Image 1 (cartoon, rainbow, N blue to C red):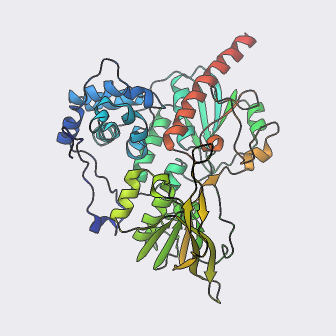
Image 2: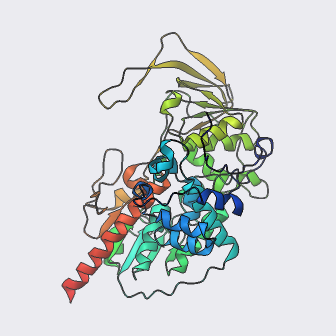
Image 3: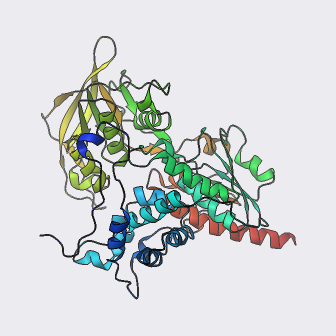
Length: 467
């Protein structure tokens, strides 16, 4: 049954067009739709939506400004708390956060908070000019390792507090996972770079091609004039299945596949000299957002059939429902309750098939999770000539291996105080995927905001002791 007063649908590229290009799929609201959607907000006396936002966005306030046709002011209100609103409006799982608590969602559709956030920030980008911010830098000096969502957030917040911040980025472009991990059709790279430029306008310095752990260690930064260091180096080390045949030609980690496609623009070969081999039949192992991104990229790179191979059921898929729906609309085939056990190649070492076993889910364990179990005798093969392994990432160990006294888990993630994001080392903080393992953009930003507050307090206390 259709809801009364439904959420305004966001226009999208037609399926038959978008599967042949890397242009953004979701086209965003026009002004009329944005005003209609903002008008659905009830202006609750005690808004619940705010408690679902990890970066404390003033949601009712910015929506009210949209209602009043004050789009520039709405964007400015967003940036009081969120340095990356155009990014969050596109990739943040609002349905599990702010929109989950919207009272309209009890009996119908919640307000499209993310879509309105995107509208306001896009309006600002298209209609105003970015100017350097007048901020007096009279605080401390902070080094930020990594320019992904956690690093950009902590840098922006600390700069607004008057600290001098330098970001060290190992790649040749700033933005971290926003640049290399998320495809152009979901998050255009010019949007990311606009957000990076905003952070730089706050006085933040960005040093590219600078790998902390090789160029200098955390200890050397701390003894070299920095009052504090924030580690936001992400999770760039791919996980593999460790099954026979995984070293055959034609098998990629999702990291390599997406970096080649997104950051190095393999889809524009030969204009960009980054070839990538995609066959006619592609199998993507996993069912998170990274798996959906990989599958949809493979389709746009010329694959005739693309399969998602996932050992659990649809209910357990980690991907956002919206991303799974987009993938299915585009013709991606889902092989659920299916576990790959070996890859089979030809005599030249190229991938030809994947052997799989059908699975059933066990009764829930103590954690409530149902584990996949193989069904005896259910082995079958799928013909594929390219495979992408998208079963998660771990932190690159370079910082952990070059930093004495840093406590880590067996998964390589850095141990922190969850309230302050401080590591076992005084003045050294960490957040994002390097702490949590691969997670969402907004959770990394939330960690960055926590760390910024704690670093600010640490520097003030440190200065007080020396006075």
